[in-house]
Image (cartoon, rainbow, N blue to C red):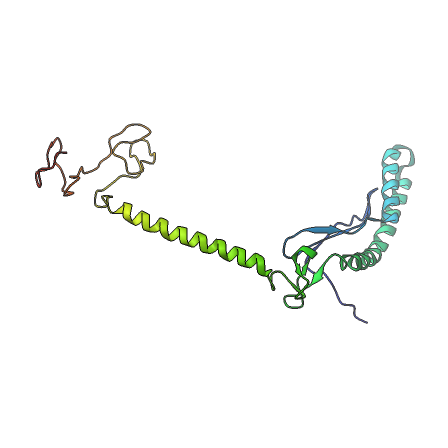
Length: 219
């Protein structure tokens, strides 16, 4: 008889097979917000006993020799033989407890916590978002879009006074610093190779010219 498998991809196996901390525990998490819930720890007695025997054998190795090691190996073998069966039983109990902490969405089949569940619709908040939250988010998006459009228009107005034809070096050839289009490097003061242009007609000005030869505007 087949058994349905729950939580097939949103849990972590925290079980420990051998050692004094051997036991069964599983961590389940919400598929939407990743909040977690851990099942109660269940001790694996056979694995803990094997851990205690191993510690004792290591401590008394010089006295018991190979016979002691054989006892430890036998305990480990018995623990390993029963671990899988007991782990499966513990997982079944953990799933039964986890079902009280998570809801399964019938639309997307995801398991979500109570905070990510829309009880009125019987769906997760990913499939059925909260109306008030969506309205508030849409209002904020509208505000941001409006401000973005106004800022873009203001930038276009400012761009009208920017000389886009003048060549600019964005990296200083001397120290490789970013120049941000300046006439001199802000790091080493190196004069950058730029063609000085008239602020009025944007014609190129000869070196040392006090006035524009094209329109007469003072430099």
